[in-house]
Amino acid sequence: MITPKTALKFDVEVQEHGKLELTVPFSAGSHVAVFVVEEADDFGDLVAAAESNLAFWDNPYDDEDWNDASSG
Picture 1 (cartoon, one colour):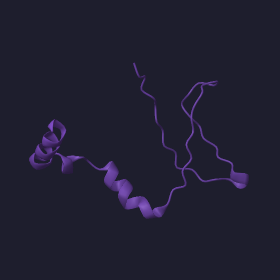
Picture 2 (cartoon, one colour):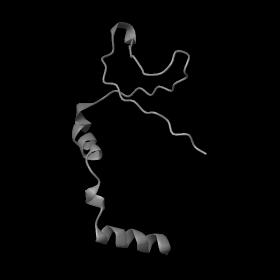
Picture 3 (cartoon, helix red, strand yellow):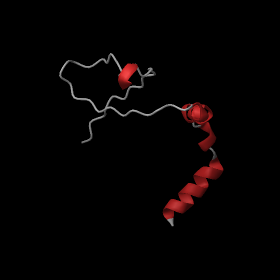
Picture 4 (tube, one colour):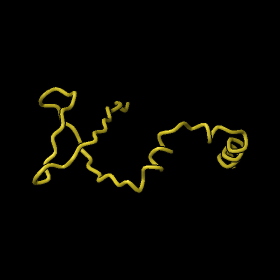
């Protein structure tokens, strides 16, 4: 069984010498994995689209195409 993981997003500035400071809701001694990605303004519209609803994909034509593709 796969145990779900908690994902958090922080919007922080890099301090002097590349230092980051975060306060997380985990107990001291907890092990965490950290992924650091430099945020670019060029992707703001894509992020907004990805975070919007999925109603675009909920249509009978798309469902029919995918159902036909998966059964063939």
